[in-house]
Length: 409
Image (tube, rainbow, N blue to C red; front, side):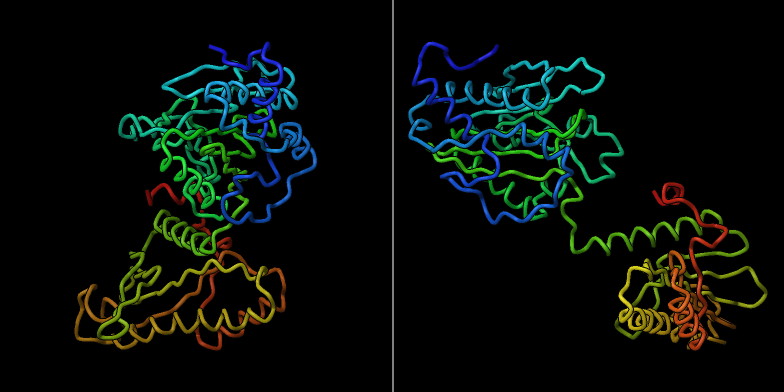
């Protein structure tokens, strides 16, 4: 059922409208304040930013109206203000309001081929979760694989801990915000905790869109406690934040891709990914790929996989990085050399895992640098140490990430 502002109460109605509009405010400081430090954001394309601007509302000075108005009146005006702001950007919106499990929703029930049906806003009074989280049902909630791979996950407009459920309450949210990893995410989780710790407070959550998909560009969360709003606006792009460990994750993915691709096309040899090597009596290392060709003599090939993009490195970092890679590989090779002609013949004995007649080391990188001088430097330093080079994109067993990941799963 539609709950809105009464049309016959004059000044009082306008007062409620000002309160609702303030909860939608984006871009200035409210009396209750932003939560935490606001980090600078990456800019949006002009056309996208203009659509966001149409969905924002003008700020009015905060009065005591939020304390005086009932929750139902404030929520009604909030719904009206949210609908008006959304229609400014999407004039042919087919908006409906409904209540489910104590939560009010504003929903665009679009029948247009240019715009998907999507939730625009939600509001409620915070309360304890009515039941344990239904994780199995939440996991079945549709989330396209492309969105998950891009860094989105199932987020809630009203947090489960504040009484939120699924269905219209779920949207595709940037993982770094939902999990509280980024500065934006920490502010967002702080607001959610604020609502949980203040049962009965008013919670407003609005989604701002930049196109016809059901993935919002921004989301605004406001928690009002005793008339004092605490507000945050959050960039819903996964790319808006890069973890300090992202290079490590990328490197690890490349390792797994190479290992899986090699095993997928392996012939005439046995291979052991993450092969353990005793570096000292008390420490062990792991060789990325330990390969034993099917030859009469016992020949071990030690492959160290690196995800280094040589074109992206500053000139002064090329030589130190390469020397570090060489030292690491040589540390493994030293243990293999100690096992040359060992009396042990078991493939899994000795410091390196066997008794060898010969051993070779290979450094494997994604692709050659485009700078010929840089490539020559890499070739010179590695050949000086009798270490071979391999370039993944030049191997005949390289696969795409999708193909390589299949056998590893």
